[in-house]
Length: 231
Image 1: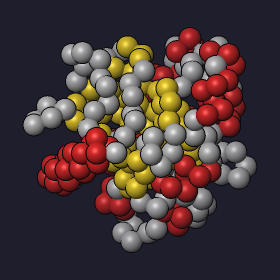
Image 2: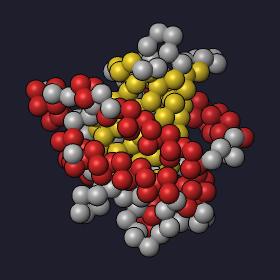
Image 3: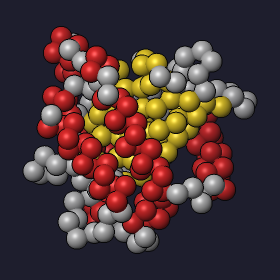
């Protein structure tokens, strides 16, 4: 318990410091972040033997896509990134993107790897609801495991049954099992407001609102996810 407490303190300290750093770079275009998420999804699905099984995409309640999670080494190892989360609509199509930070005291990166792209598949409604409370700790608030790829999905039923979230990662062209245990996901209200150009909107006013104006990169990402989910 003491070890978990220390890890939590380090994670929150890192999160606070990186948020300050992120504020200094607030001019980064949110459209570019969504375009990067779209590219990551296409790259993950472009190699069938390493792709996320379409069955899992059909069963998913939400998906998180995080390009270029950065590894730092100041005082202690830590990692940070920004990405988007999309929830399924009732008709099975994908809803509008929301922005989230992800930060961890350590993601277990491979030796020498400085950045990793990651995708999180949310298999339970409970884990999605936790997201909209503002913050979720992976492994504590929702169980997480490395997801199966390609044909492994049908064979690895134990992972599928016991995990609320499945993680996928890719480092410099290498597909591997980076651990996200203990990482914190927190909603980025600033980037979300910038993307939709409507400050003050609540997540539930964005997710399934057919009348909200979604910028083209967001519409393109939804089309990409719809394609891979149905094919």
